[in-house]
Structures are given as structure tokens and as C-alpha cells.
Length: 162
Image: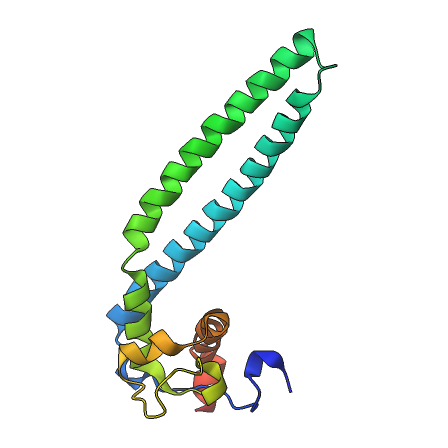
């Protein structure tokens, strides 16, 4: 039994008959936005790590002359790039802020069942999967799994088995 499938081994179930082409198109845009934001965030972390390493290098008092000047210019460039990337990420996050409610609506349009262990313990025992609020109780570590399972279930070979 895999952790990804939860304790019970039960799997979520889907019904795509309520999903319109427009819904699918909107989700594609949302997924792309989330992927971009994730990539920007990863790049920002790497820049900040490089910036911290350069700051440590500059603390070395034996670094003098041209080498120190060069290291200071590198640090300034890293700081500028980091600031620019932070601004881009914050702007993107502003645009994506409504994404979570859109994702919950999407889940509500296709999910027909979730195992209990995919939800937080405080989730109501009675739930309606067509209600987007139900998905506020989805465990955070299951969101990506659920999105991937939905995408896999939409593939032509998966649909032809239904």
C-alpha cells in the first residue's frame, strides 16, 4: 500500500461529464500559471543562495583589490536580479491569487469521491463533492496527487477504458 494512495488504498473517482471545454481551457491556464510561479520561486531560492555565498565570500578579509571589487559587483548584480525576480513573483502571485478557488471549482466539477484519509481530520463526515468548499479540507500533501490523477484520467487511453 502506497502512501500516495492513502492508508486505505482507496482512490479518488472522477466524472468528466460536467467539465466543459472552457473549464478545461481555464484549468490549463491556471496550471501554467502555477508552474511558472513555482519555477520563479525555485530560481529565486537559487539566487538567494548564491547571494548568501557571495556575502560570506566578502566577509573574508584576505579578499582585496580587484578580486574584492569583482565580488562586490557580482553581489550587487545578484541582489538586483533577486529583487527583480521577487517583484515578478509577487506580481504573478497577485494574478494567481484567485487560482485556488478556481481549482476548487474545477475539482468540484470532476471529483465524485475522495477517500477519508485524503482529507484533514477536521473535515465534515458528510460532504458533497460538487461543493468547492469540500476541497478546502483536502490534505495539502494530496493536492498535487489529485491534480496529477485528474490529468491522467483525462488522457485518451484512460477515457477509453471508462
